[in-house]
Image (cartoon, rainbow, N blue to C red; front, side, top):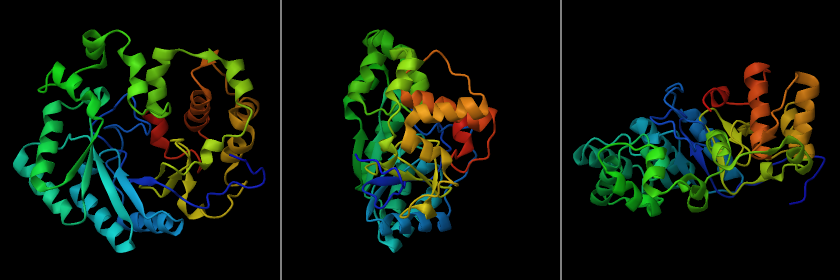
Length: 332
């Protein structure tokens, strides 16, 4: 992709989603958005939902998904989002869930039917060893059965893990070391080829222990080109605070109101640095102006970028609208 060195602008959106809450019952080790039970129990409100959806539609995208955190932790809030999407004219492709809310088939069917009335057609049901560390598989199976009864489509993400999880037992949770004991010591190493994982957020912390690091100098010499990923609109997200998350760079934020026009260099110095000079540019800025001390190696340029941003947000405590939401950095 050609980088325009004069302006950073998101002119259109292709495919993406709305993050209703970062609060989650789980603290999955692969979570890009660093969701956890420690987040404030805040859910997207009507005004932000409407504003986000109108902006999404105005930039050419007419269907999205809903994710979290765990959207089902506030069924009434989820109903509001579904209703608002219908009134704005944005189709909801699916809602993601980790199934932690499941108690029994009867109550699950009641919840699902009430959401179906508001336009819920498909549930993406998370199914992975990461989720299974926190949620016993009987709940996941229960949600899928309830969907079948309620006439709601199921998109299991991903079905390939079904037999492995069942093989360890449905009644309790199971740790990743249990998976390694059962399915081989290279289990973690093989996971990224089987399951779409973006090495950002908490996933970096998890997989740096699996894949190791490359020397800092190597990362920097590779990271002098501008980060074109920031312009990727193929899997975008807006969140409950009205932030647009550029690319898949969780912890970076653009005010949703600023999309559709060139961003201001004064308001977005970090994004412009990354956009034009890559992670090497951000490294120079952080070391020269803020005293950042790098480790000897990092897994990738995204790992280095994340550590620099975390340092700026938590250690230097720079007040930047770009490093939002702040609890993301506290929950990695």
